Length: 193
Image (tube, rainbow, N blue to C red; front, side, top):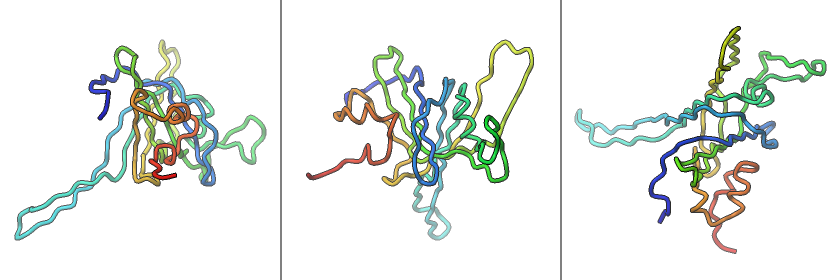
């Protein structure tokens, strides 16, 4: 039975991303300074109709659609959009027809109002869906957050998303490595010797 019975999300912080390249997850990168994280499931409804009446209906999640607004670290932003310096001079990055948006694992921390409880959050199989965007405005008084979207798909365990309250976990390795080496195996229950 969970210990946490009331959790008012006050703040989202500590975003980290590991991009996948050739089927291998890279090292963790700090995502940036967060503004908002919004998640909505995409559903598919299957119905059974008998003599013109709906007699049964099953709704299934097909993916999650996530929007993040943040001041994103430059190296991460280049990976999100698929900018590359392959075949280019040092310091030059390009966006071409073979550029692919970044995919991999992204993790966050959510804090309660008192900042006494942390909820670890992870999207283990995600791909950015935002195309290249760049807005430049002279004379602004506040730097705008960059809004990015990604789709979260099922992982090897069959889940789109994971969360864990640090006070409820019994595995210290889980908390210590959530942001640095998250994989579906990290959260999978292993039974037996």
